[in-house]
Length: 407
Image (cartoon, rainbow, N blue to C red):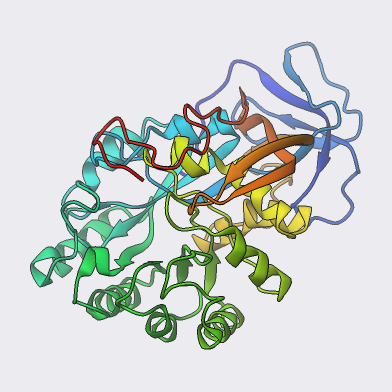
């Protein structure tokens, strides 16, 4: 569904006995019920609501209810790129109600992403449009940003203008693996387009050039740096004190620092040191794709659990996975439990469980608390949810069955 529009349901939905978290609404009962009408909008909230018989009841049994988990960086242009997964592999069945595709499509193939993925999906799906016309058709094998012939400025502007309901920003991968020696030019072009279109820019930072140090000064409030805690040489904010202070200043300027875990872009050590020094990510996202799903990432709940284990508070983790990413794509976050608002929530538990996971560098860590989704609430539909069970749990050197690429 697009933009919180839900198909009419045959019954109203009651979520009973949930503990609200992350709504920033004063006066909420510590445990409450949420009644959703058949049109998918909140009809009433309160403790111990009395309802008639024609209601589907979801018993939360004291589980938490938050704004819907929102994954700011994933790749779901399944069939349109060699890297993407189906939305349902990282979506509602994992507690995620909103997915933002991070540049899988460029202007040349965005229509397919919209028609075949965004419009039929249960989840709300938005997109950052890649400034490279072909997007990630053959990710890391055929670059989308080889030279100026890879970018069509006029067509990119036209595609954005025709799809502003679902395109929420622009995406530029700024890494030597992608751009070779083109250095900062693609970032500067993308930023110029962002100013013209009044959209935020998401920049992938990786192996230099360009330097992470040179990218940050080009960005302005609302722009997004994804893979902010990567452990790559030349791109790690803890191996270079000057870069650390640039990242710290960028956060103060309103630059969104996004985790974007992925198969190669999140380090426990970088996260641990940054958090110990007071630098928190703004948003927590997975960079889920078919090379990270069964390798280092698994799902959003597991990624949230990793940040919790590194020292982020429970509520900070929830906010960074719900309202913060919604703000980053300029969606409303106020009064999300108010009567008449579209119902988009995640019901989840924080469970005591000992599990060994890895970061993108294959470094293991033992977690003792896990975010466990129970339901994704989309309108009057409650979709049962649980964490992903990987085929190859955190295996280093996982070989992608789709393209043979080894992580």
